[in-house]
Amino acid sequence: MKLPTQILSIFKRMKLSTQILLTFLIAVKFILGSVLLYQVGLGSIFMETYAIAAEIQEDSKEAAQEDAQSGQGDKLDPKLLNTKKAALAAEEKRLAQKKAELVAIQKELNNKIEKLRQLRNEIRSEIAGKKAVEAKKLKHLIKIYSAMKPQSAAVLIEKLDKNLAVELLAKMKGDAVGKILSYVDTGKAAALSEGLVKRE
Image 1 (cartoon, rainbow, N blue to C red):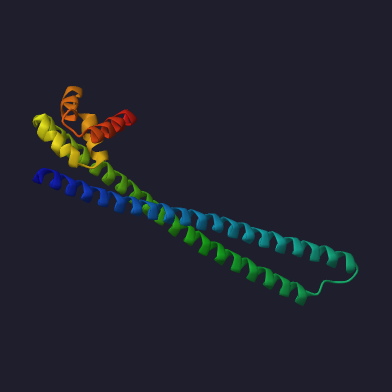
Image 2 (cartoon, rainbow, N blue to C red; image 1 turned 60 degrees about the vertical axis):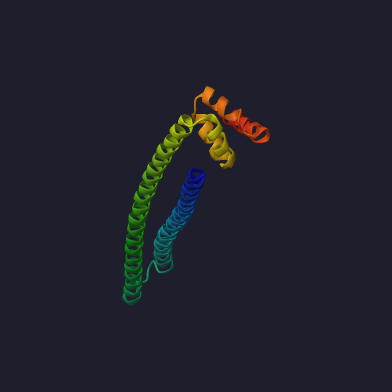
């Protein structure tokens, strides 16, 4: 009678750790999605920067055209020209600084995304390792149940969770399953048989 209790506790612990791991994976997926959305937002900032620079250039061209048209015979005011040049230089400097900041942010985001990818790959390999361990444990249980007398195995199968029982029986040989199910309660045997059919 100790064997099913131990088996159930092992599988409950494995089920809990799997749920925790899945929750963590969902959180990582959410973070990756947020980072990508943030990165898309940065693209629009770059577009705004280029639009501002284009607008400034267009304004300076228009101002030059207006100056040329209004004062064809007049001389250009050097002070006004110097003021405009200084304003343009200051704006270009500000835009270059903003662009450098955005490039640094983008680089940092790329590094974080790379770290998240590495973490995702580590999680995937850990999940694969856990699945391999679970498969090994299940294989061991199958050997135990196959080696038992059908009556004893039937008593234990009746006490197992339906999904676990179906998983075990599905991996056992057909004749062994038939012998065990012949000793299982009729209602439980019908439910297990239905589960085996659906699984296939």
